[in-house]
Amino acid sequence: MQCPECQSTHIRKNGIKRGKQNHICVDCGRQFAERDETSRGLQR
Image (cartoon, rainbow, N blue to C red; front, side, top):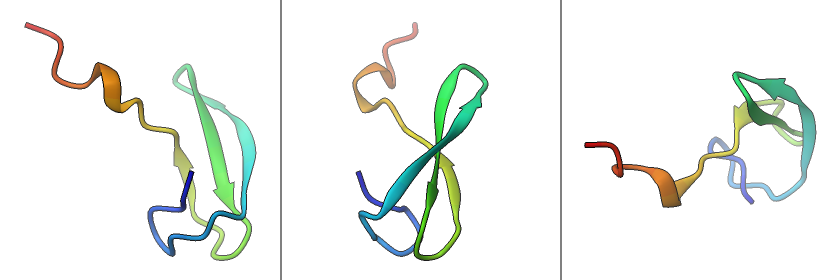
């Protein structure tokens, strides 16, 4: 997994938000939730 801001792989878990694992980048401080690419676009 990479930071969407700086592409660093130095990531730590940072709680759960809206039922998804939240992460924080140790290098730039950006917080983000892990995206599930496999389930996107399956709703009809």
